[in-house]
Amino acid sequence: MTELLQKVRVIDPVSEIDELFDVLIADGYIQEVASHITDISPDTPIRDCQGLVIGPGLVDLYSHSGEPGFEERETLLSLLQSATAGGFTRVSILPDTSPAIDNPALVAQLQQKRHGKMRKKEKINSAPPASPASPAPPASPLPLLHIWGAITLDVAGKQMTELADLASAGVVGFSDGKPLENLALVRRVLEYVQPLGKSVAFWPSDRQLTANGVMREGPDALRFGLPPIPTSAETTALAAMLELVATIGTPVHIMRVSTSRSVELIASAKAAGLPITASTTWMHLLLDTKAVKSYNTSLHLDPPLGNPSDVAALRAGVRAGVIDAIAIDHTPYSYEEKVQAFAEAPPGAIGLELALPLLWQYLVETEEFTALELWRALSTSPAECLGQKVSAILPHQPAELTLFDPQQTWKVERKSLYTLSQNTPWLGQQLKGHVVQTWCLKM
Image (cartoon, rainbow, N blue to C red; front, side):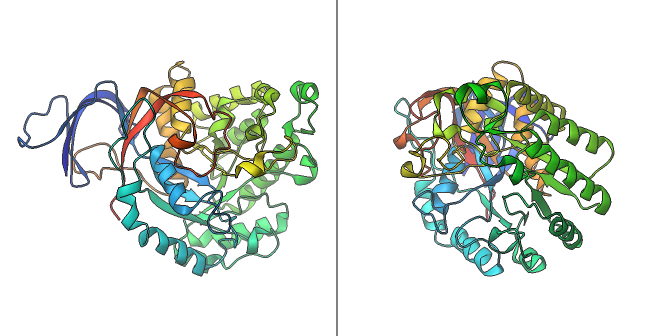
């Protein structure tokens, strides 16, 4: 199919472009990018894209699938549809399913499900649902699915998996998605992973220091009467991890950075030449401890929301490239699981359909971030953390793109979401910004 997008704002972190262009797309490829395209066949559909933004498809570093084991929270299909609705063309799932993704057979099973059974459904179901104020956008194909292989059996942090077998099965990299506190095991993992050429991601968190805490230590934790988690629960584990990387030299990705001190440690490590990348999550860039005043259990996160100084440091870290990427860490839970006291509810929130609109509204429209800075942190940079590349928006390149309307409003409610869960503090609120269409790589 051929389509001409007229006067669309092209945001391309690869080419460092933020300009108005016409973009001609045909048969899954970008045919032409120019100020004014006129040489088209008479039957080519033309879309007026004034006010719309197009950029490389968004890439999520890590999120949680309910399937297998917790399909009432999220199926693989609903996860991928949710990702499409949020503008993501690649999504990577963590291995903490039930059973855990710790063997090649389960990797193959999930890949087969994505490539086989879902193929029949994706054209019908993958368009984001209509908001009450607007029609449904055109159907979009489902994103590429990448799978993190578990570092340890049953993600229990004790016995290492057969990493080479998982690598051969096609995992994108290795991570438990949980803290690994046995530093001798971490060292062995770094040694074994080195020749495999795969990403390895760790979440620095000392669970003894975390104890029963649910909120970042500080004046707000005292005010709200919630058990605190000290900054050192993250930074001591991070410092130990950086020492191991310095010793062994294996490239490592640091997940879920949430404190200002961690940003300082990562900046120093990068300045010293350590082969590390780092990510924070989208909610840690938007909200701080003051938001917990509502006791909304969707604000119970792990790591917890930071103090205002942490949020400022994280934002500055992303802009400076110290924090390479913004992850979504989409964590669905059922209504029943989240309807508990704040400290008792499981930590986590959904985000695939919400991240781009909210980040754009609160970071780009306020001019704290440029559009290029935000789009880079959501697309090309997370791909690089996975050892992948994203094509520039240029002629003859694959059309892996996201079309976004920064001004379209919609309400976050059950009927406007593809995810099966609704654990978000924005439930029931009106948002500005909506994905119009995605173009995914052909499989």
